Length: 275
Image (tube, rainbow, N blue to C red):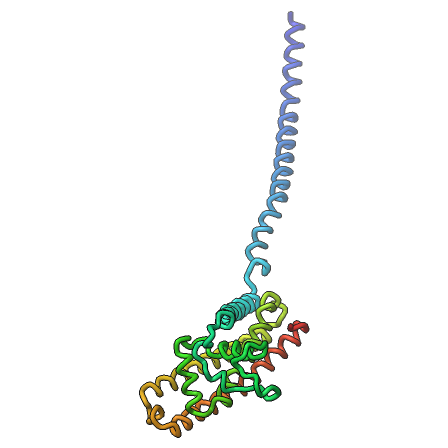
């Protein structure tokens, strides 16, 4: 009995002596495992933090100011071209639907081709039809019901050759530029910003000449109706009045030709094939 008690005490003391080492090792192991896990977690979180930071500062996610400016230029220019082409469809429709009296434009019958003295601008030949179409182009913003009166004023002023040819010449330039630009509108992004600005400005100026042109014609109509400076009752004064208008138109046509050259130069420089 005494022997068993002694053995029991010895086993108890042995286990007690071993337990602290086990607990310490377990604690160390747990601490090492937790430290390793924290390190791993920290390491795993780092890429997400970096991605978030990169997403906030990366230049690719911000709108490039130059690209924004270019996009606006492209939108504005394409809108101008679209509007001009819509107008082109209108005067082409006038030409196709032209009545037998040619909208009262009797002045066409007073003009003949140099190489064919019997062929007038009122005839149904291809070139005469085209002549009238380009005239309608230049006069597109003017009420169609006023064309007859315009024709009468031109005839009475005895400026039918100079004035009507000037009107047709401007219509020719405008029609050519619309015809040239419209098929290219979706490839204009190839142009640098500086060239886009020049192209837009040149085309805007060309369209503004058409606006001024129409305003001048309408003003002459109004002056004639109100017998301003006796131009309705005195053909000499009417001729002088119309001659002033003709000179203004010729100056604008000169400007239009320069704008045409600038537009063609920019297209040839950047797109090569312009037709």
